[in-house]
Image (cartoon, rainbow, N blue to C red; front, side, top):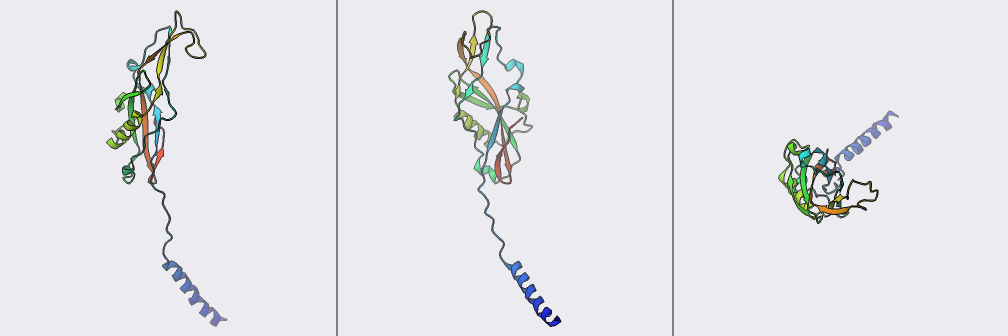
Length: 184
């Protein structure tokens, strides 16, 4: 019996060594992608920059069109494994609903970012918002006192107005892939 066991042990060792010498299994990694989150940060702006309404006026915010695409994470930056970065923009929307321009906001202007973002992320955010469209913002001016219109500006006069809205875009990577996270 000991003779059969002694022949079996070298065979088990040979099989174990052969398994260790085999090539490691290749795992296909998905291609890197990037995504961006967006949140309005208008409430962080100082009161002097806000629209003041008279007692007989109401205001309707511009409504973003459904086709407004979020910025794309620049493919060239995925390999750099950058830490999360926030880009804040003030987006000027004309009385016609078209974006008239945008500018970067600093931390003192309501942006939660502590350090400036990579300029290529700022460029990606500005390129995206330049293509956005909105139903225009308007001020509803009522004759006399302000009524409580439940259905919008029914008894008043609509006046389209240009506005600026502030947005926070968060560019983030996890495991080499871009992810979406809403800013503060």
